Image 1 (spheres, rainbow, N blue to C red):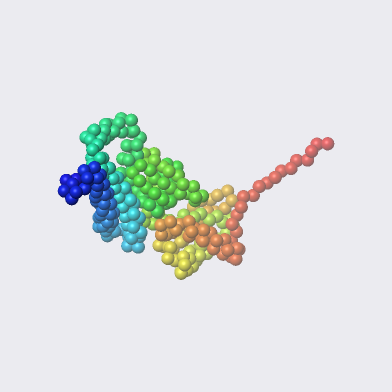
Image 2 (tube, rainbow, N blue to C red; image 1 turned 135 degrees about the vertical axis):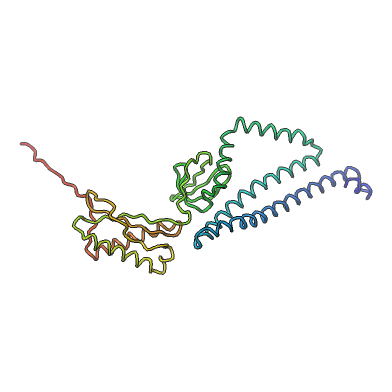
Length: 293
């Protein structure tokens, strides 16, 4: 390029500067184009791979899970390959400025050894992140509990997982500290509600009332779409100090268990009041002794 510009009559100093600028501009353009194709290819490849999993998943839930995993995998792939492209482009740009990149490449090898010896925690986090991806433990948008923290996964990378809890607090958890990952929204969720009634209650009647409430909820246009089965009394769960506990179970769509449980409580409270079914509360006996005169 420099000799071509010199043949056109451009001064040697200007020709060299223009040549370097042109080369760097081409490097930047090729890097941007490469990143664009990486984004495009990542979307197509992950969609193709996850289509096979969707064939074995439940029809109504496969699309949601697939979209979440696609978003997560796309972010990871684009970040890792994008970082490699930027690094290569930077080394090529340095070479155009006359900087010997041989020591830089050797330095990367030394840095790798330093990471292996002195940054074992960082490597542990990365490896844990890789296994979370390969095992599909959770994705962006899932509600999970990890390392004693629960919340919605807002961001996931090879090094850390970012959660936002119900109070709006953002928690950043290194992946290496995650020993148990509890996914609360994988494929389906469950309403698990205990309702206590007084000991003198007709249990069969109370059970029929609760089951009727569950059927009404299933028939409701707004709430029926959130249910996978009708809420009903599964058993008498325990005989407590104040009353008898009825166990109510139902499968619902992911992340809908809290809303459905709240609606069930509201309807049960209103219906029990109309039916005269008592929800007991703890009684306290206070003994007052007369003071001695």
